[in-house]
Amino acid sequence: MTGRPWQGLRLIASPYHDGLAQVDRGRGTTRLLEELHASGALSALGHPGTVETVASVSPATPEAARVFELNRGLAGHVRDANADGVFPVVLAGDCNSCLGTVAGCGARDLGVVWFDAHADFDTPEDSRSGSLDGMGLAMLTGRGWDALRETIPGLAPIPESHVVLVSARDLEQTQRDRLQRSRIRCLEGNAFSDTDLRVALDELRERVRRVYLHIDLDALDPGEGTANQYSAPDGLSSARLQSAVGEVFDRFHVVAAAITAYNPLSDADGRMADTATRLLTAIVGYALPNDG
Image (cartoon, rainbow, N blue to C red; front, side, top):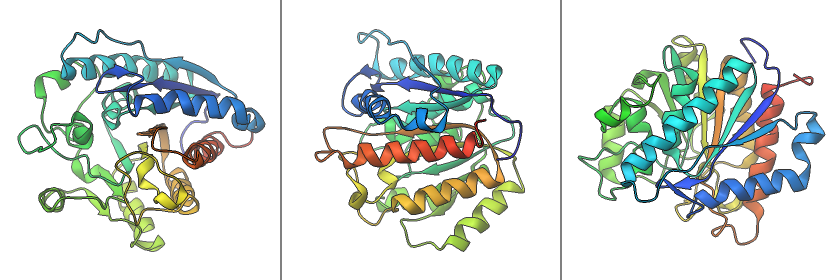
């Protein structure tokens, strides 16, 4: 860990998908909190922390407006955690929660290390799915929804050169082409070497010292458990993901971390809940070593 030491842990729950509570991947946040409580994993580390939940918004509000309103609320929680000197870990249904998390940390001179099976780099102009969840990284780097992005205090575009995307592999050709035209450093699937990852992180460290760590659980290979209905083969093993996260903490002051996109309905045998709990425990251990 680099940067100031954290004085504790704060779990921030955003149990929403498309701005609706407890729907699809929005259910995953509650399930993971239940698993953390039942396992005693964080208490065993000496960091039980506190838990806060982002307030819901009216389901009558249009979808995009709901998503951005939730991000404004999330930004406040993350901002307060940073001000209190406690490490914020966001458990969110959707990857577009990144907007609120980054706004709460302060986007200036911030890097992003993003683990995901998908690029999340669509815009309203080129998206075929219409999914706001597939636009998270695009919006974070200043693409699309300009007027609504401006409603989130503290949010500013992250330069593409400040982003390392790891394990993306489930890409349409147009999505791959768009990503290749960008300045985002992408390490696809699980085919990259450990040296490739270290080089990418070292190059990012030449630009920034602060980082937001984003983990969509479908970055993991389905052999570790099924994160959601969009899980794809040739992902990372749990051990390799934890090792990669350790490399991030070794180089940067991680100002917030997020675990997203867990759908318990896809996790029929419960293995992903266990895998995610072990991952979160590892993140907290990296962020708050030796009891903080």
